[in-house]
Length: 482
Image (cartoon, rainbow, N blue to C red):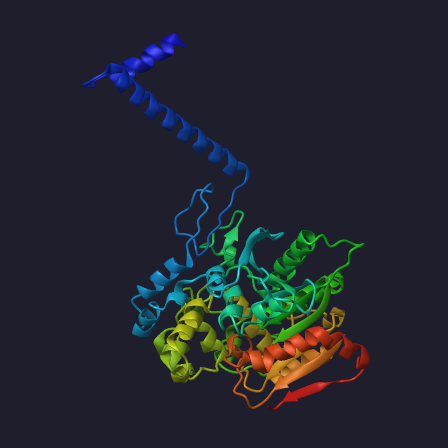
């Protein structure tokens, strides 16, 4: 030890001009050495940890180069907005909207702005994806009607948990449910802004994006339901069930889960499907144009829409938007509005709401997801990806269900939703919205969604099973003509 200390002193003093007290100098050097030593030990500890717990986790996409597995990358939503605003192909309107404060807020930040609290839970799927699920905490000083019922809300095509709260604190469905006493969980499918992690696949790799809504139902939903049941200590003796509300792709995922893993029908109490995508024979818009190329997409199509993430720039080229879309370019260049149609009247919306929508939607998704839906439109069947000879067995879906549709929806048309109604085993009702200019996205953040949809959703959650018991053998189609 003495030899070590003597050697250390010699090294520290070598080629140094020591001013003042030698011992002060020595003390400073020893302090620096101690700090360096602790830092080195911590670095070694993190390397060892990374070997046994490797992960590639990001809030947005990882950079192109390989990120060391011990680094947890979380690119914030604000950084994504900054990237969009610097995009040379971006319109001036986008840059203007970025100045709106809510444009850069994540879902938990929006909830905080709304006076609510939101937990974030990381869930690992059986195939290695890392999902970020949000849970709404009860509001103080509110006496709920129900006592701690549990409900899952799953977003739609290219969406995220933020979709459900874009309407603000008074109208958003999660807050209405929470105020009624529900324990509200907001799902985030793999590949969107909040669920870009994987144990060993990089989000900028082709392999990461080899999934469609089929895997969302098969892996994401099973992991989410199992996690909630475990968190709430649901057992065979304590067989509490969960309510499920799915919009668009969120409905598709549930149908995949219940038809392929029927035991999950018993873990849920009721399913409410808003604008469900399953049979898509009567689809309209650009998805119909992609339909003939959906099985073996040519290179020029993949170059246009992306071969991994669907339209990774989050903007449809102007020349394509102008060809297939009528309305303000601000919305026509948005990939979700471009596909689903129903461009809103921009003049009737305030800038804050428009900023929230256009900077949170789309939230990301795979090209295979879009191609899979185009395949359904082509075949007229509800089948696995690139497998037209087999179909999901919807008769195995025994969960009591309510279906919502609208006559202004390009994607989930009334005839196709009606066909789905007759295909599942226990439908409760098919609620049709007529003559309200109610498009595919309006079911979640339409300005009148709270009146036209959410009030009915709460009624079905409370009384739907009673209707099912009374009219289980009758077709009950309600027409909303208010």
